[in-house]
Length: 76
Image 1 (cartoon, one colour):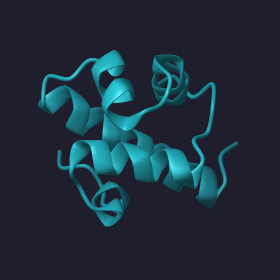
Image 2 (tube, rainbow, N blue to C red):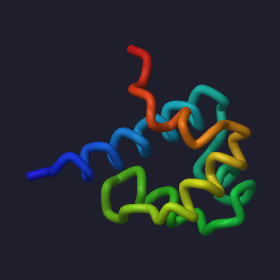
Image 3 (cartoon, rainbow, N blue to C red):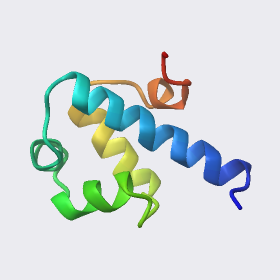
């Protein structure tokens, strides 16, 4: 069962995935731009790993978005 923190992390990951796909970026392209391993993105998106704050910030920088942007609920 997910607690509030887990749900918020999942929401952030879902938002990153949504933005990545909307921009036509592969996991590898995003990982390269963020300076992290491709497996990090894959594991994060499939809920096998929770990202660190540092990783989330690197991803936001690579996507040229604010950290607060991934805290928002995804547009439906």
